[in-house]
Amino acid sequence: MVGVTDLVVYDIAELAVGPGTDEPMETIENAAVAVEDGTVVSVGDTDDVTEEHPPSAADEAHDAAGRAVLPGFVDPHTHALFAGDRSDEFEAKLRGKSYQEILSGGGGILRTVDAVRTADEETLLANLLSQLDVMLEHGTTTVEVKSGYGLDTETELRMLRVIGRADEQHPVDVVPTFMGAHAVPQGMDTDEYVDHVVEEQIPAVAEQGIASFCDVFCEEDVFSVAQSRRVLETGMAHGLTPKVHAEELAHIGGTQLAAEVGATSADHLLHSTEDDVDGLVEAGVVPVLLPGTAFGLGAEYADAGMMLDRDAPVAIATDFNPNCHSHSMGFAQSLACVGMGMTPAEALLASTHNAAEALDLPARHGTLREGAPADLVVLDAPSFVHVPYQYGVNVVETVWKDGERVQG
Image (tube, rainbow, N blue to C red; front, side, top):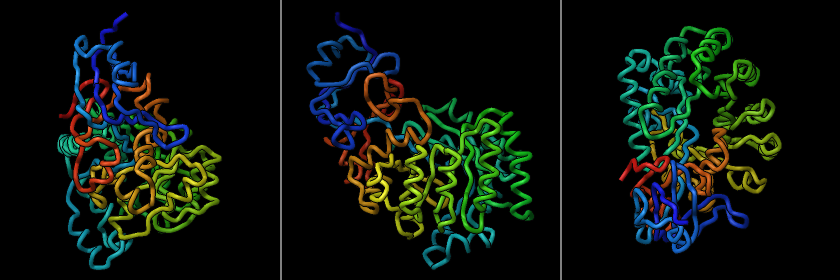
């Protein structure tokens, strides 16, 4: 019986399906994909799929004309909601100032905190929606966005409210993370501020009911392992799943903390060891690497090869924020290949299926297998290799979200 479908994309030169058995990414040549009710219902050879789901009978048919199609990118780590401008700090870093020096002088995160506190909710919402527009143009269909530029209960709740509103209004799915433990506000010592986070902010965030995760900047001169554990365990007691910024600037034990508390992900990991990664794999924690951050800081990249050798499900993210101003998961893949030695297939897997795991999304998210959400990206290129290969160029032509055309 011939089926009537919502969308058929056919004559695909290369369809990236999802994790492969023998290769990181399974692909199908001369392929097609059919969609019903926002869900992939058939993938395979163009002749086979279009015989069962004729393009002429579909609500929308798209001739890929020898282009590549891949799952929408999942960006599992951003600080995309902010106000103000910190481009002068880019110049300061080029003149030799370190991240910590800029922060200790009232710049960095604390400067953005001042800007966010004074911005009204509609301004913040407009800012975030404009950032999501650019991400969508570059093929991102799901993105995690953290709070953390409030550092007080009122502003943190306002940020999360804006993130929730953006999720309702924008085609990109937005996953909200609470990160009150992002820095220590001026006028408070660290222990005093941790008390404020666990006694006031987290209960209020849980009552608000928007955030899914609780993250903490476990780092030298920011939050110690003991302080970070207290934040994460309090978050868990209030129904928030833990995430950890770990081993970005120094090795202090944040990766092992992520394993011990069963975090969904441990992120950055520039200074993580083999034992750290073994702990993540054993605990089922996804390592999220942020090559754009290392690029922007002029730092050594995380050791992706060491993690892949241990069969860790490596994910990559943009870390889009005022200190790492790149919206593009394609550029993150270029840096993952050139800076961390990943293959294009490994980088694509890290930007789709593995990135979805870093956000605890249901099975098949970040793939184009039957039963997956119909988040499709058509490239103006014949292969997914062109995503990292054409660095500095956006090769995304058309995007569908849940089977609806949202770009191109």
